[in-house]
Length: 209
View 1 (cartoon, rainbow, N blue to C red):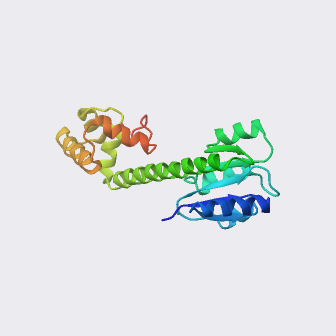
View 2: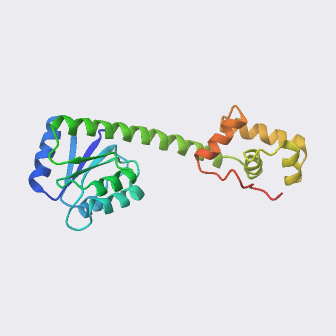
View 3: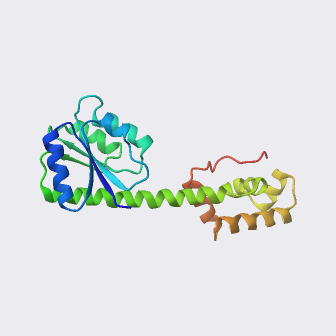
């Protein structure tokens, strides 16, 4: 799918000129005169990035950024502003902006920044798909396997798991093997890493002890 550069800027002349420039470089471009218009037409899962003006009528760029972090977290944001504002730039970068440029920026700088943003999108997409795959694998565990997994990642020994669940150590070993097979984990450390990656609480058991 062709990536799209979304230009969100209330300055019509700048918006139009930038859209033409990027189109001339072979990029697919969508332009919006306000953050509200952009949010109303927020793209789905298509790859791309956002060139977002800092100061606009209605919601500011920083307000739009906060909403995009919830609604389209994979889209990298490059802020553009005609007024240098160090604090705003710091706030934007802390909130995860890809870059912060003052207008007008050179063509070379703009194109290089967009290239980095699109590469960042691909990295985020790949990581998102990896985590989605891990969550799917964990969700495939049976109830008992999930209980055993929850205790495994806490570092519980087989005999401790057997006592906590009221089953034999032999049964624990069987479930433990099934868990590792389903997750494709080659070691306990890898299983723990998977759990941490998807945000499981490593300090809380999934079964009563």
